Image (cartoon, rainbow over all chains, first blue to last red; front, top):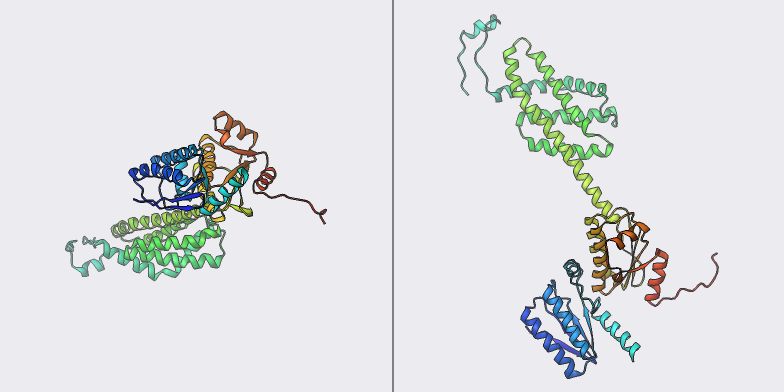
Length: 120
Length: 304
């Protein structure tokens, strides 16, 4: 399944679909980092609003994506985690530790704007 | 049900009450006869019953007029149940009656008491009517007793079920009322928790908070547990989970009001306090939240 990745200035926005297979996630992991390299992006927003379930593999993949992207000097923000999904995740101990999160796309962009302002 | 033939001619039995009739009626026939008797003597038996209720000092929460009105409908439902043997209708009536009288403070023992009193009053009237025909009295009682017992049972169970329903409803209302999620500033929510937190309430709290964060687009949440006396391992872990889940929605949580006992509990059970942002009291928590949100509070004048 193709995950749409949009470019907004120095930020890439990847919108995850509802049912991503393990293969899709693996594909994405490589793909996103390649896009960061290609466009010299400073940040990636991963929008998971459409995901109504997050298992341990998806959670781990997101952490790995964030780490890999940080190695390229870029920031990752996960946005749009639904309340029910967040609840289920913490019960399974999947906390996405070390990865920035925000309520939605708007908040994610605001967070990045603030961060760039501080570091520039 | 076969009828045994009489051993003497009918004219003989009528003039000679000492000769026994061997024929036996079907139970349904007996019930019909019984019901007819109860209907015929309705006024008298009902009054007798109300007198017994007052003597036994039941239904003291109700006025004489109320008792009489309810007694009338209970009596009629009782007789109807005997007649039709339709106990679902009686159960529905019992629940309906309970719905009316529970708010007036009527207790379970009173409801069971009055139904048993009615059973006694009706039984006594049967003794009186059939006192010359002991065998028939026995047959009538054979038909009456199981039905009367079932009625008493049905009414009592109906009453208790209604009480349980009311209790469940009240518990739900208390649970909802006791976990309000309040917005005190743009992007700032407060969750004051008071009382006992059991795992079920903890879970409800978390769900309510997460929904509140999304609805109000909150960036900071202050959870105040000043009103919570004690916390066990399960609930402490739930609190940590609430903090983590809130972070996944982009909100920072500040926990305030930890009592010395709870602080001790959390340290003893090894909760990762690095994951929790805590401040002494609610005031301090709100002040820190305001700072996080970029507010500065300035006093411009003295209070009027």
